Image (tube, rainbow, N blue to C red; front, side):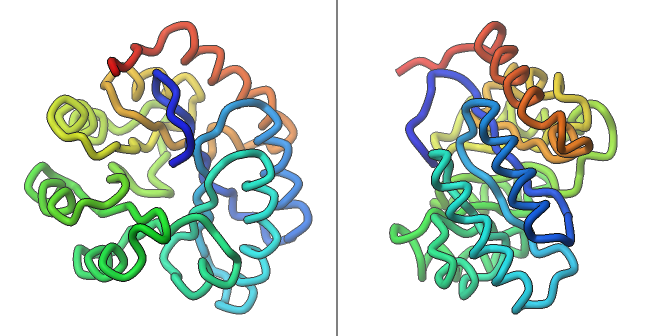
Length: 217
């Protein structure tokens, strides 16, 4: 995604804020808090043209902070907004088409891998990463046990990096890191109170610096 650290890194999921300026400010503030590998921009309920405007506003903000900007689902929006990549949360067919069409020009990853079999199907496509969980799957303080188990299994055997969805508690990032996963995705844990986002990103990075396992070269 961007230059790897020797430990699990943070991926942010942009909050669902209708006002484009407030949304851009929330993301910019969060990114000032410290290291973030990439930021995923979901469409939520926006129509295509509004989503395009939001993407064009957010992508430069994300890239200026040194993170990769990933558009969820829409390759045309990704292209027009000059994003770094595409996050495909849909079925294996969509991911196959995106990998064939856009790699290596864009980062392409995702997958809705709910079990080992579907995860291995995603792995056969050689995406840039696999995502365990759903972008809006942070419904409890802790990460979902199934996603943690899949991340631990995957990280122990497959070279393709994985992102595991965290919970609503920022400390869930450490749960994910302890599985050996390369990335942890946080959404509500960072953006539930946008004013606190920079300090939460800083806290999560400090926690990972102190306690996350280190990867071997």
